[in-house]
Image (cartoon, rainbow, N blue to C red; front, side, top):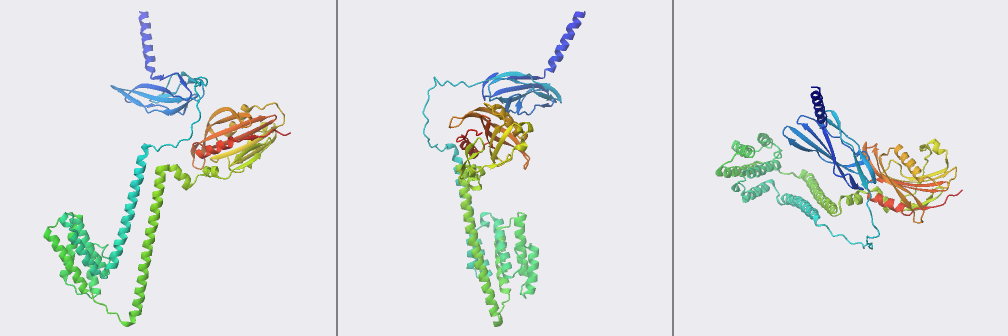
Amino acid sequence: MKRYIYLLLILLSSTVFAQQKRVVTAIDTTRNKIGAEFKLTVKTDVDTLSKVVFPKLKNIGALEVIKSYPIDTVRNNDRYELIKKYGLTQFDSGRYAIPSIKILINNKPYYTDSLKVEVANVQVDTLKQKMYDIKEITAAEAPLGNWWKYLLVIALLIGVGALVYWFVKKQQKKKIEEEVFKTPIEKATSLLNNLEQKELWQKGEVKSYYSELTDIARNYIEEAIEIPAMESTTAELIHGLRAASVKKKMTLTPETIENLERVLKQADLVKFAKSKPLDFEITEDKNKIQRVILTLDNAIPVVIEIEEDAILNEAQKQKQIEIQLKKKRNRRLGIAIASVLFIVFATVIYFIATRGFDYVKDNVLGNPTKELLEGEWVKSEYGNPGVIIETPKVLKRVDLKKSLPKNGLALIKEMNSFAYGNVLDNFYIMVSTYKYKQDSTSVDLKKSMEVTLQALESQGALNMVVKQEDFETPEGVSGLKGYGTFSRINEATNSSEKLYYELLLFGQDGGLQQIMIFHEEGDAYANQISDRVLSAVELKKVTK
């Protein structure tokens, strides 16, 4: 009996432990080349009401997370299988451990299994592999995939050209109308005839017909009787016309004003209530407007100018002519400005499509590092032991004694530092030379490199990636090169920015020479500056 009880307890404990295995870990391969991707897969099986949180990671152990894949969901009846994948890589060879990561299921932590992977060097066989000469520079053919850019440029040019043409034609039409018609009645009569020739209502465009018909009447009333007819409602216009007729002593019958009011109200119904008058009603409305305009024109009293006002009227006419000339000049100026803006806009669009936005930004808006690269460079010697380098600007002496620890400062006999910019800029060059109190046969460059990088971290460098290799000047002087990237917080924008750095160290008997450059990552012009500076470094021996 006891044996059965023990067996039951073992089965229950096995069931409990099996249920606690909520997270399954797998990796696609345990051995890969430098820079290749390891794909880490994490699976969990939960019910439909469970909440699962996978962490957002930049690094897992010594491996960098280069991609966090979207979560895949597989439904199995009333349960979900959630699959999360991380793309990992490492740029140094060796054996690495992928540590456990924490997964939250309903706010309860579960941990993945730790795994071991190996990153292998890429073997390069220079004995069996044939060597070839460097090929000459060949102009690249324009890719066919960029055809849409040229199509976009053509479409934009056509669109802007059509806009300018419409604007010019509109101004010309307005100018012709102003110059041809001497009186408001001539203008109204001509526009009514043109309206009939368009045959709008015969084509079904009743709303447009009534809109133009009433605009002709309103425009005539505004110009001839001098009341604000275009922006007035129908009721306001009729009221203003009655008041003006009394003021100007115009003889108008009630029938004339009533006919105008009926047509305006009919037009309002057509435009806003989608009313559709019959054909004979449309013709009758047009005739009413024509009679109203003629009646109003005949009712306007003729003002006989007296000789005393002749000089004043002549001055007013001259003033009106000057105003018209000024308007014409402004019109021409506006057309000229619009044409220039069109040419500039079309040119910018063309270069963006053919050369890219960066080309336009660098050559139009300006790029500080491009200006440094293309400016006049200066070759000079700095410090002791001397460092001769060529830089875009003269380096100015800086004092670094405050930034060094007291125990390190006690070992230094002489220190000289020269820099362009400061550590908060997006481009920075510094040359430093040190002479130590106790002469030694050699300087530990790796230790000096570590101290310099620690000083960078103390000044705000974060997430520093460090790579090292041997370096040799054109004269054959050997040294140590450190390079990589780091992040820092921009206090002005309160955002993170990534910088690329290069650091050269050379050791002499009792002396150290150091060159440091860092700049915004991805700045092609800054990369060219850095290459030019470091490719022509000259070193001098220490002087006692």
